[in-house]
Length: 54
Image (cartoon, rainbow, N blue to C red):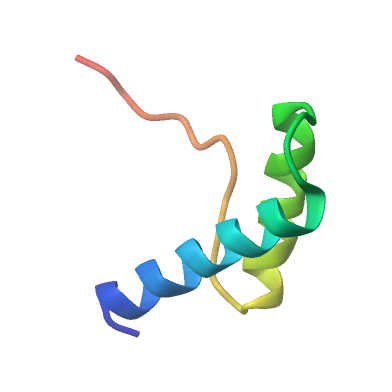
């Protein structure tokens, strides 16, 4: 997939999760739902990966 195709899938997943769950939930709920949605779209994802800051 190209970067544009990956970005399109991610934005679509975010849109679908928000439309399904609506506003007002804890961030952890949206995070879990988005992770599920991205995996359903067969994207290779990891959560809370450490990023070095210098």
